[in-house]
Amino acid sequence: MLNLVLIDDHPIVLAGLVDILRSQKNYNIVATGTTADAALRLVRDHDCDILVADLNLPGNMIEAIRQIRAERPSVRVLVFTASASVETCMQLLAAGATGYVLKGSSGGDLFYALEEVAAGKEYVSSSMATKVIREMRMAEQRKAERASVALNSREDQVVRELLNGASNKEIANKLNLSDKTVKHYMTQIMQKFNARNRVEVVLEVQRLNGTPLRH
Image (cartoon, rainbow, N blue to C red; front, side, top):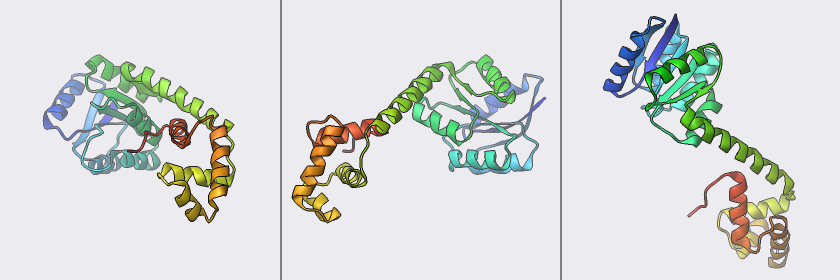
């Protein structure tokens, strides 16, 4: 039998989750709570196999997951949330969550996720899994492309200032360089990024870093 701690700050959702899981003989609900702090405390205070927790709770759930995994590595964490953000899913998995299930999933999907997580496997809802895999592949591609663009330390400093929206004159003042030297570095940087101007350099750096354009 699996001992579960359930965390959700919506009473109706929490009550429904309790009812669904109690209908199955192999789940024992040892505690429930409504905050990230409660999740950490209840896992510490109870014999828990799996923590089932929403993400959007009072407190920092990502940090709570990190602490739980550090203090109780045998405890599995299954995030049960309405958030379909690929970035959020990847952040949670990186923090130590072992499962990610969307609240629109069926009871059968939830039970299957619990069994997979209990067996030491990772589980992500099928509607999310393809997106996560695609993003992971894109991140690896960006990493490889970044590695192929070899900037020296001064060029890297110039690019950082570009990302902050600095003009050539501002870059020259900040880095104690002449305007001519900054222009030289800009030419070198544009060639390395195959860019025609400073805007294209910024766009390419942000693409490789997987960050959105600043407004």
